Image 1 (cartoon, one colour):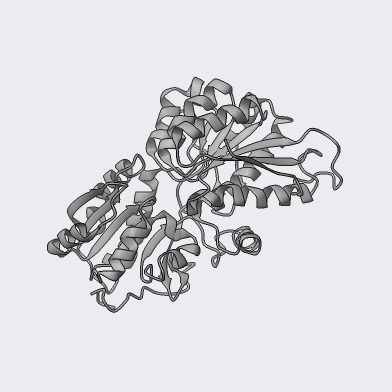
Image 2: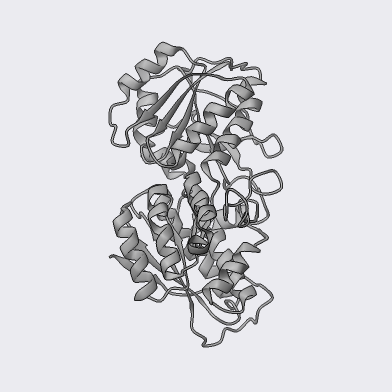
Length: 407
């Protein structure tokens, strides 16, 4: 399993000594798909966090050491990496994956090996629901990203303000999502909440992950004449976006597009993402919290692109683990779990708290205006322009000429 050690250089000041001791490092395994936009952002962001923490003396004098593994978007490879991380590399915690199928495969292993584990980007509701159903065995796993049900609600909240209650006066939608574990509850959420905000759902399309030709799909959607396409796409993000622009589909795309959360997506699509509207948890141009823009600036300086959505989560998760170790007085896994459960931390994406044992979404981060609610951006002239909520908006919706809306 390919692995690299990102040796310590830094961390965050929790009121700790300025000079680190020679104590053993706190090892955090990071498992992700390095070839994907949303995957590579995870180890990259974790490295930024580790550098910051170590620069301020570590945690009680212990440096953060990131041990990174490429899982090639394979659940089998991810499990092997997890086993190696626990048994051979002796990590104390793991941050893993933006892919729900991989997260679900790792969940029982976190319990078997008693390794506190956080996913910064996987969304399936099943992650938290399984913890709720088998807490004693799965309590070591934490859902550090919004579950799909919450993502759907966030998209619907934005759609109400931007699409139906605005001058656009949209009334109909077609849902187009990739066929994956995370989109099953997402689509169920869309089906429930879109009509409540005034968008009648005319069709619900599940796209195979290996789809390369979206022409018949777009032709079918155009035949329905919806006002908007509401998306749930991640792994297939480039192809549908490029073909939407090349074929000049006259219907706006609005919803979740995970790859489009990083600035590299503009180059990857040769600008075809112009006009695409998407929900994400943070963006480099909006101070969702005082930590958002400084992290994004540090990431851009180090890697030359903005972090994908999962990067914000991975960065925060390193700090959550460091803070849990500090409050737990060490790296005992059960004490770390208890400390993580008591998390109340202002991260880059908002105020981070996990739901407790008795909540249906056990160990998922809380959604809402006082916690993590996300925002909506639109790609305009190569930049992600915040358009919702109004409190942070830096622009308004503006679609390409081939998109037929009441601009």
